[in-house]
Amino acid sequence: MMMRKESTKNDIPRNYASTPWQMETMNANCTELRDKMNAIDAKFERLCGTMNELFRGVQVIKNHILPPLPLDV
Image (cartoon, rainbow, N blue to C red):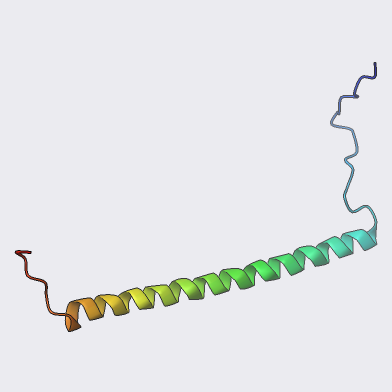
C-alpha cells in the first residue's frame, strides 16, 4: 500500500505557469478578465443610476400628477 508523502514547508509548490511565456500569457488573461469585469461593473453602475432615475420619475408622477387617493377606501 502506497502512503502519500506529507507536504512540508520546504516543498516547492507546483506553479500553473512555470515558464516566462506561460506567466506572460496568464498575466495577459488576468488583465483581460479584469478589464471585462471593470466594464461589467461600469454597466451595472449605469443601470443602477437609470433605475434610480426611473424610480424618482415614478415618485414624481405619483405625488404630483395623479390625484391623491381618498383615505376612506
